[in-house]
Amino acid sequence: MWVHVDAAYAGSACICLKFRQYIDGIEGANSFSLNAQKWFFTALDCCCLWVKNLSALTKSMSTDFEAIKLWLVIRSYGLANLRNFLISHVKMAKCFEGLVRTDERFEVVVPRNFALVCFRISPSTISRANPTPSDEKCVNKVNCKLLEAINGSGRVYMSHAVVGGMYVLCCAIGASLIEEKHEAMDWKVVQEHVDAILSLTMY
Image (cartoon, rainbow, N blue to C red):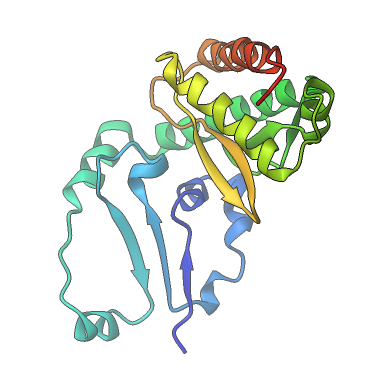
């Protein structure tokens, strides 16, 4: 059996010694990959793939390598600066997560490990704002509207995920030019739009 570890987003963090424990046991895998464009400042598309037995891979398929994209990033920033970027992004995400937790209208859906914060307007908040019963479908609809409003503002861009039928907003901090002031602006935009959405009586 070929055991593959897909670390598409978080794999980039493993260049930082403080996050290396997240790949403990990786020596038991046959291959490991990460997508450098997701948190390594590389243009689309660039996937880094390590394999224990290179010949097994090359015999099974043809391969095209576009390594110059990643080479340019590493040459431009250097390993130390890349580490500093990723660590600062994690700190900013931790701060953003803290802001979400201080607002009782929201809930952090899963604990943050790296620079991705998954959150949503909580079902109890929607039940208080909406006179009709709020099921999961209604909760998802309200959160979807919030994301559309945030992205429609043109000031912030967030993504979403649906996990186990639950629609969640995803704030991923990972741009090379992002600063703490931007993270504060992100939260301000979220609050502005949640106020508007929750002021509606019907969803």
